[in-house]
Image (cartoon, rainbow over all chains, first blue to last red; front, side):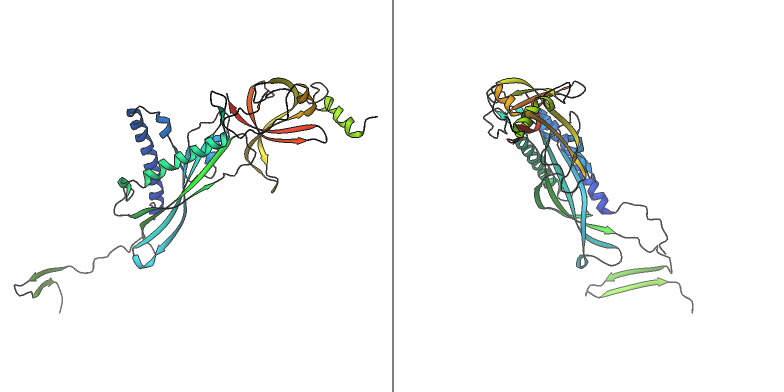
Length: 221
Length: 128
């Protein structure tokens, strides 16, 4: 039997939360940099969520907050046997879907034309994707700040899609999915070691390259 | 002697446009040239949308108005339609909800029924 309580997060959970943390903290940092650059910081604002199935619901409420939404959710894992061992560590190649949602409202352009809501929503979600991709693929986050656990991260694909809404909508919402592949180590519970015998060993190399081992241990004849 | 279709169209004056004995509500229509008219018709703004393929409720919000085509023409307006070009103003619809709160929309889709003389417009949020 496993003699210890399995009371930990697996790496796939840690990495998911780390992706969310990076995006949220970088959004705040970028907003501060935007202020210094005399630009509107709201253009760098993201609302980041994890594992939400209907994150865009806030866009459907009365007077919705128009800030773009980013939802990170775990999709699937494949394990690379050639880079793993059967005892302790397995290399996982995991896909996280990072869904970006942009909200647009048709509005007057202040002149003789107008800004169509569907176009505004598409531009908004593409701007969000730009931020997300640049943050996650920045050299700063080559290992997602988890050196020793994360091998690589890679943008596997980017696909635009329509949220599950009716085609005839009061609101305009557009979405894009960035599939991020992250390779990392998963660890499994180990056998608690039991002391069998104490051995003291000195390993020496002589001038001619010979290896000499001195071993001391208790024994009974 | 008017036919049944003509009688049905004339009945719209009661069924569609009468706020006392019908379901008429005040609706303001503005065309891309800025011509505005106060009309009476059906209006709706509901948040539970039914997917016609599956019959299940899905996330969404559907706003619409039903207007009598002959009343639009009498007011000097044509048939509302979606304006795709950004360089033009859209058709604008204003009406209040049942609580009296004002809402402004643009016409996203126009579905005229030229047999009965009524047009149904699907609406989208609009900020002036």
